[in-house]
Amino acid sequence: MLDPLVDILLFNLYGALVTGIGLLLAIPYAIWQGVRWIEAHARRRST
Image 1 (cartoon, rainbow, N blue to C red):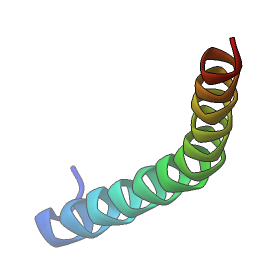
Image 2 (tube, rainbow, N blue to C red):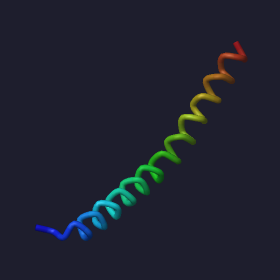
Image 3 (cartoon, rainbow, N blue to C red):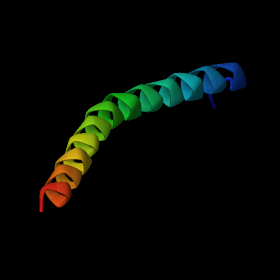
């Protein structure tokens, strides 16, 4: 069995990694969604 301290450290490291990847994926996705929303809004306003 892993030492509880090592287990907590690995869990925190994994959590930080997942959070980091999540943020890296969320930023371009948010930009893309924003661009799509602006384009849809501009198209709706012109008609």
